[in-house]
Image (cartoon, rainbow, N blue to C red; front, side, top):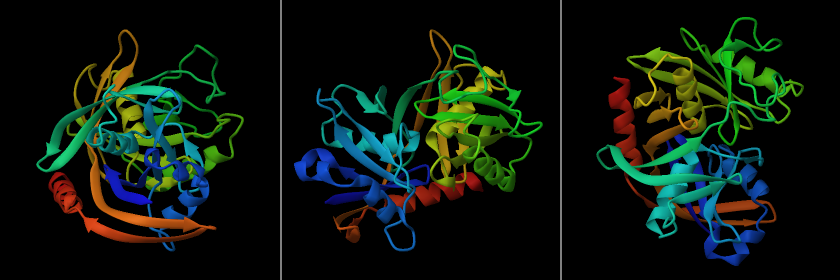
Length: 309
């Protein structure tokens, strides 16, 4: 199979276009995700992106975590899928589907020279059955979650996948790891698991760190950056409809939240191809060859160094 090593904001993936071969639809993709994502014995990544097409002809994304579980949505991943769909003529409708939801996609202006970028509009709900600590049709904005932490004030949002985010003066990765481990055992609060983020104000924007469900602490999580920007808008920390710089250890995106007629946050950021290659996967055994380095990774690293000073 053809594979593309790619990343959005440093969140790296192995992408496969399954629409080009009927045989690819019979692959055990959970097993492939576990083998290929392993950074010791596999290729190494934060997950697998599958470009898929529904029976009604709509193209979309199926994202798998390194542990083989499926994620309903991935903001960094869908931008990479958007680029491939754009280049191969799959994006004529301007829509990509993920986790049963449709997302409007468009080409965005490059966030830096030579760095292709895309924008996705993410509808956001303030309630879902992913959260068992408040009622249906209610919202949870800036409150303590009893049993999780005594003082952090979380906002709960569903972006196709569930998130809780809290503003802090300074991000503590040890605390974030502790929170991430704690929610895994709190099924009475989070029946389907949850992504946990802490964010802090920086130079008019925000900096975000995330413990991802199924992956742990990663350099970047697109929906977490989107959730954090949305929470900051809902809580009045930043004004509505402002194009906000959102940074993490992996790089930078831009988020714009609009609250009417419903909550939608636009996520703009890079879709970087590191290399093209081929892979074989049979009976749980993986082999691969890198065929072509694109040079885009070096441009991205130069951009990250420039924003980090």
